[in-house]
Image (cartoon, rainbow, N blue to C red; front, side, top):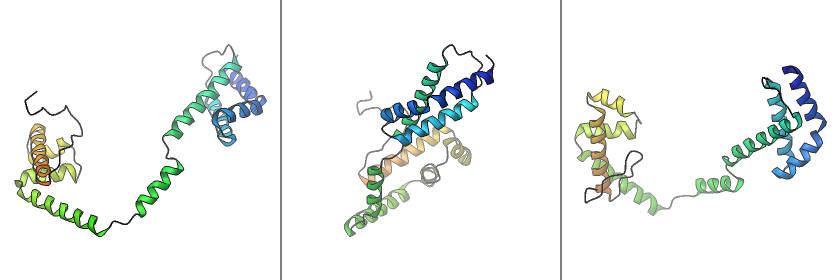
Length: 184
């Protein structure tokens, strides 16, 4: 069987069994619309089907293809926010901060500005380059004519100073866990 013949046979099977496949998929996915979309996506995949490997059982092959498309769709849908989650985000964005929260935030920002001014100029500039400009360490190292290791050292020093000044813990985003107080 040639490639185009295999494609044609699979397409004919899809068209002939469309109503039954749609009904079974609707039960599995919980939606007639989702089932229709899966079958449409399957049809599009069949258009790209190259038929390089001979198919012994076209019906089973088509059914497996439909189920794979459905599984792909379900995985993609899980990454999307639900209507409840979207409503919650809208409510959060509509919440108005009270005067106390605004005052506390401004006070903390002032404390951070003071802590930042207490740092040596290069350390201060490295912190701003890494966290505000979001530059990679190698770019910062090149800018200041220092090694990547020195950038990491200066950045850690700046973060620890600011965290101590604000009464916070330094949150590590990557790398090995920090050593404990006893050196282990």
